[in-house]
Every structure is written in C-alpha cells, then in structure tokens.
Length: 115
Image (cartoon, rainbow, N blue to C red; front, top):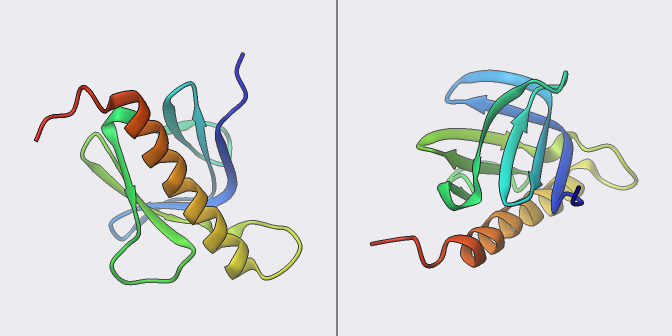
C-alpha cells in the first residue's frame, strides 16, 4: 500500500537489561511503529500517537529509546551495514528515527494529547 516513512534493519532491541533481538527491524508505516525480530515476528507495535522517542541519558549517539504504550525499549542502531563509519551511520539513523516519530506523532496526534 504506502511506502514506509522509516525503516531500519540490523537493530539491537532490548528492554532494560534483556536483549530481545540483535538484528531486529524498525518500521514506521501508515502512522504506526512496528518493532520486529530478525525473523519478522512482531515484538511490539502501536500508533505513533502513543509512542515517544528520544535519546538515552547516557550512551553513544547511535542509540535511541522508544516508549510504546508505556513499555520502554532501547534501540541500538549502530548495526547498520553500509559505506563509511558504522558509528556515524548509526547516529544518523538514530536521529532520523527520533525525528520521524516526533514529526508523525505531532502531525497525527496533536489534537488528542492532553497535559
């Protein structure tokens, strides 16, 4: 149907100290965030109005946090393969992920948020 607004593969997804997958996927399509395992099984998903994204207080630039319906996930986006430095590519991907969630959430759910 529609092209994904954001896609990342090779993402390490964890909750607290537990690693859920080392080569997962993040997809934002049709106003919905999906966290997937390396096999394509769904870890979690929610409308972007219920998702908050940001940077962890401590850690490298290639990490991001996502709160999906109150469940917090740590996303390590440095596993991207491609030309150049993996850390720089991961930092760029983390930044794009945070911007995509904030932009889609702001445009789609600005009227439904309170306080």
